[in-house]
Image 1 (tube, rainbow, N blue to C red):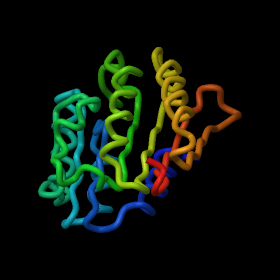
Image 2: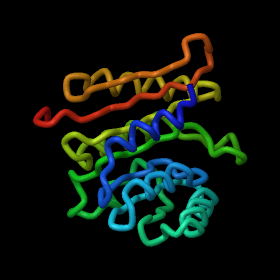
Image 3: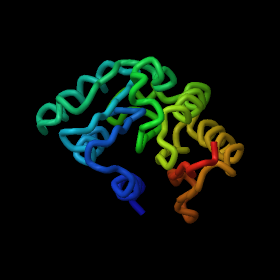
Length: 189
């Protein structure tokens, strides 16, 4: 299974043109561009990354594809998402994507960390639309990846009654990424 493609396929089903979406880990901008294409020219995508390189790459990618007016590139920690989403968009986010780990083709010592990822998830709960979707792709193959994946798994387990949860992993591969699709259930708040 190609986890990124699966995450995008499932996210596409949850995003209507004109919606609001968030790429919580912009990286090279691939998910950001995907989200921009889904929301269309009437929608909004927030793309966050702690690394200036990632934000520059993302801005260039979406600009070259003609979506610069749709995407707000934000050089910030994903844990601080609430500081960047205006009041009128809170509770209306249709989809948020996390691609945890490190920026490909970059410094592998700079990785997402469990404490900030959990804070980001906590904050995202108040921003998500009632039936909104969170896609979390976690890589266990780097030094802090397993710890972060376990922390995310714990966060999800504590909220199982409020969400429909799907977990995908290649059981034949001990270092397989883990993809969680976490969908809000209307009226479960």
